[in-house]
Image (cartoon, rainbow, N blue to C red; front, side):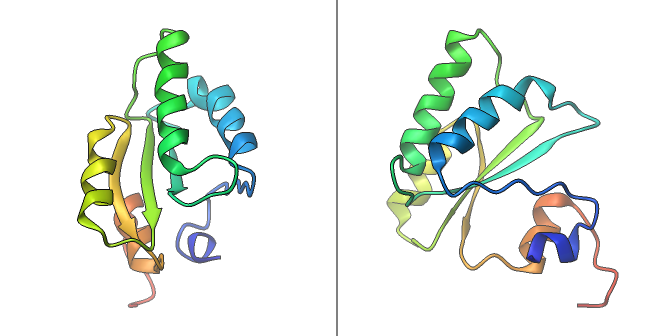
Length: 121
């Protein structure tokens, strides 16, 4: 809901199953371009596959497919953890743009999308 309020043109795709989300990202990754970039908000604590496993598998899949890491997909690790080890670990992944502490706010969305506030808030 926060994303839709700030970024009205955003196509928001949500997965509660990280494996299905992983398959979607791998399948659509080659379609992301400078004119049509994507942002992935990736939680660390998920059922079936945590965020670290997701990032490891994603990196392996790109290597297998011989696809270079692109800045057309911005991955933000999203967590309630303020543990310095988690933040440092997130930045070890070359696919990760930044680490965001929950809750996600309008200002957070504006920051990661570069959208200016139009409502004065």
